[in-house]
Length: 77
Image (cartoon, rainbow, N blue to C red):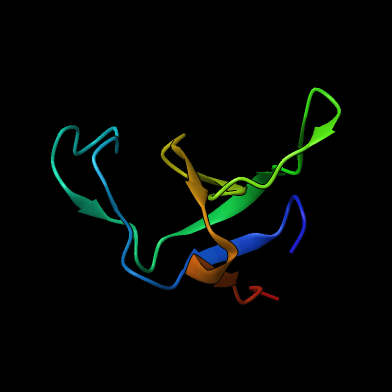
């Protein structure tokens, strides 16, 4: 996976920060978004974050996820 790839959330990920469902549990499973960053370093120093993949969804929501929680989305070609 790389920045710019379309991905789909494959496992149940409950968040409470969704703009349309603020302070309520919202399950991201099945949602599609775009990878905007993969965290590997901080100020030039290597890091190993627990949730390294940053995915942006259509609702301007950015969420940090594990690689095991997402898969490549099928292209619409």
